[in-house]
Amino acid sequence: MTTPTFAVYAVRYATRGARRGENFYGGDPHDGPMPMDYFVWAAVSDHDTLVVDLGCTRQVAERRDRTYLRSPADGLDALGIDVGAVRHVVLTHLHYDHAGNVPLFPAATFVLQQDEMAFWTGRHAGRPLFRGIVEPEDVAALVSRNFDGRVRFVDGDAEVIPGITVHRVGGHAHGLQAIRVATAGAPVILASDATHFYANLEEDRPFSFVNDLPASYDAFDRLRELAGPSGVIVPGHDPLVMERFPPAGPGLDGVAVRIA
Image (cartoon, rainbow, N blue to C red; front, side, top):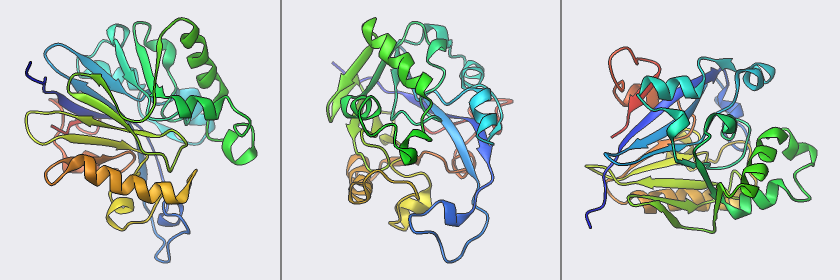
């Protein structure tokens, strides 16, 4: 059977001002403005639509002093994606800006690494340096859906649907996973927070918050391996994504781009 190919999109839902010193482990001696964007992603074929991450709600963004541009659901709707009908959602990890809005996807099965759920329902989740980066309600929503049979746990590398695989990389989060998508051209690697910015990967300098520093470096190597010589690696928070790829359609400048 021929492997399906997907169109891949990035939808920007929020932004904030930041500085270089905030975006690299150990800071940056040449500190200056380095804003951060917030995205969800979608992969669409003739037969399937898969959404990667769900962003957060306006209330969470405003409480955390992020500039909320639009609901991720509205951004996906602008691409013609009915979130109420989406059957496949991959959650790269459970930090607040990636795992919100679960109730907006009533038909979906949520795919995440079992190590990620174990961490956020385990004994370290309540420690001060960890508890501030999740919304307990988001974790609870997934716990509830697990009892409904709507959470698929994976352990390491796995195929989600033909043409799309997930790969545990760790580093920034205990069970962080990246996604490899088959397209009509080169494969697309949705790195999420395995590299927040192009510069993290290109300069071999992890982001400021890490769960495991050596694993963050290993994640860089894994991204390159997954991409191979011609693949496209898409960072999780870099405003340059909106500049390096074309708008996904008329009227979508600043809203969504087509990666492949």
